[in-house]
Amino acid sequence: VQLAESGGGLVQAGGSLRLTCSASLSSATMGWYRQAPGKQREMVALMSGGGTIVYADSVKGRFTISRDKAMKTVYLQMSRLEVEDTAVYYCKQRQGTADYWGQGTQVTVSS
Image (tube, rainbow, N blue to C red; front, side):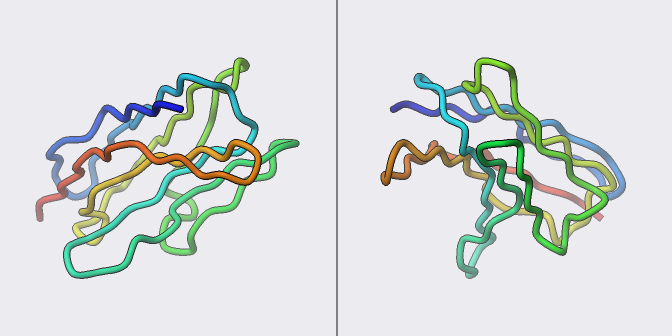
């Protein structure tokens, strides 16, 4: 499985970005994680079969995860970005019992 993220960049606090993850295979379970310098990787938003969505408390109300009907592309719309959102954002897809990761895309939020 190959995953490719795009859409990261530099944005001012309060701004918006949209991340895209394109997968070589479809999957009902896809999500976004992030890792800031010196910190552990954490879940940001996860979408599973049936459309169940889970968000980290820190992004609720600001970020929205969605996917296409083919379940090969997942998006993360990020609004009202904060400096604390600065991190490398990774896409993850589950195939059976295996998890696959993209290479990550940097999001930097300046004050």
